[in-house]
Length: 317
Ligand code: 13P
Ligand code: SF4
Image (cartoon, rainbow, N blue to C red; front, top):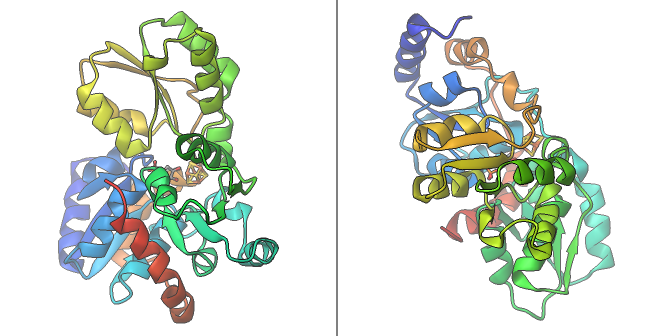
């Protein structure tokens, strides 16, 4: 399927016919981002999913995002154009592993990144995204132990920002972000000494960037640790002519649209999430035509997960 004008017309027509709102994550291919009614980061899209008037949500993103939309809006039909679009980070912990971890830390508050399955969310006290992880953890009384999962790099970022010693971090990682390494970042930053660095907190190189700043190898004001939505806000404000971007490469499309005068370059141009890219123009068309793939969450699990997800959408910017 070629994403031409005829495709765009048909997608729009079918969306209207189905009373569907199309949501696209910032890591989707440009054609899908541009046809969506709303494009954004995980937190922004969850908020739209919770408040949208449409009876159907077509989630162009990965499975946990569509599940989160279904948890927030159980009466809506939630579709994902390809149900195989998973997430290696969400796969790094299951509900049994979390129950065993909780048993080792009775009374601890469980904070789960939104990149988790519905079953894990059902065992969670508060969910967060990379936009509000620091605020979510800061909202927990300082004397309570916190179990933070599943991303170790985001966990390290939250620990640094909140200064909490009683925060335990699960050793999961996203294979795309973990693959953007500190050596590559250091080389690129040295070659472009005036560039700002926009770094997603899931990146292994976030710690390296702060280390470089601490050593004086990179000016500390050049280093910005940001969610994908935070990167867009920062792009609109930046005075720099060039920015090095450490996250999934789909993000570059929105950044270049937001600030056409800035030269945005990926730290690693191979950082592409194969799950996000399963949402092809053909898959979106099929989804709207056939009402596939429908995402359902067991009512009991959704009920237990809803409080944690609702707390997430209420906290932070
Ligand atoms: P955000 O859009 O919340 O920054 O999330 C990044 C991500 O990896 C989603 O899979
Ligand atoms: Fe999951 Fe990483 Fe892909 Fe995001 S980029 S969906 S965290 S595998």
